[in-house]
Image 1: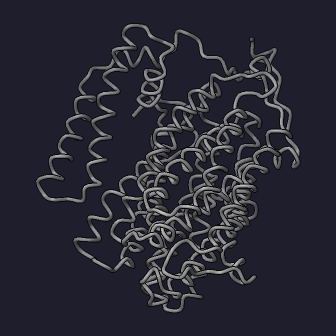
Image 2: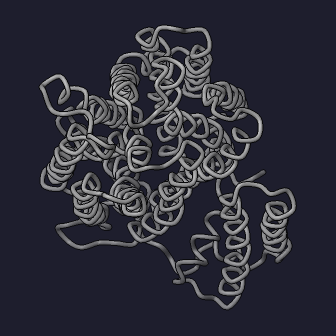
Image 3: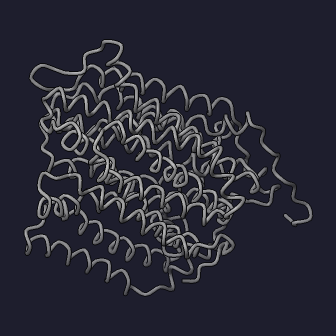
Length: 508
């Protein structure tokens, strides 16, 4: 369609912004329950502190596999009245709700680990299309507002999910189990979270109407995928050198595990590098044969051809999410050991520490909800999006570092304020920058690929951090907070290379 005949997308009202993102409120309740309670559940079922990173591997691995696939498929889906992204909202919500209802019934560690895998996969099926959904539904000048509202719902949902076990404890629900096990406070919280997740997602599905491919064409933002895709042609012209390098790097990692007796979880990292190297070889061969509809070739081609601004933001994501995952795994053992002096999971002090961690997580999420609507727009107008994100990440680094100077667990609320400001920006600013810079017809796949740089650092933390802590700081999880502060500061410095006006250039 000629540019002169295109029309502008309608501007969404506040109610429209609410409806578009309300489902994320429920999804984040599920994530908050997972993040704040899974280490507690694992330890209550008999896991040792050293085994926690290995058990958490399931969650990021499912995201790594699910998000690019769902992004690719949702870009190419149109089911009439149900739309493009909403079918994935519904499917993921149903599976996540079932997982949340079953999780607190776990009687064995293996059952809990498998349900964590299923829960994280289900949440990712719903979550990934929500990122693209904001870009689909909003004009470019509303992207920042759209992702800010989404972040506010993420914060609000996380507050509710994080604090609910503590509220139940105050209302008289049992917070301990004789002989160990999952307490009723956690059990009932997961059941409540499952119902809330499904109802919130259902609200967005029923209250929104997606723009059809014809509508997108009228807006000049075609959602169609022409057969002569330049990305696949670029992939077909690539040599196999980088694929061989990826495969060799994976083999080297696996040999290093055997040679230096590293933690066995590091084998997974080597296996993933080998898998990507082999997958890229297959994808290149498919592209050379002209297989334009093959999912693997399209995903690998889009990954290899990411725009420059996306590559630079990916580095920022890598370091900032490394810090977050360190926090999610280790805050409960840190607070229990260093502030409550109760490292034994069967003790009442450990369970009290678990409840306080839920409150702390609620604080940083509540701060994020407020900061997304009040602080980020103000900073973005005066500093720009990139500098705003840098400043917020530095606040997060200071929050992690403060764990070393604070002695009273109640004062950790101050630490969570800095972390909450960083969390608000992490959830809003990178996506606001990207949504205005990426081609609409590939918004789903690019958002899915971007989230790989959320998943990979989680896998590295889960595989490598355990080895480092066991070798240098056994039974001293407080040092993980120093690592979190350092990598968050590196993420802030990496923002110096991000300039939002680069648009869709693919230059290195």
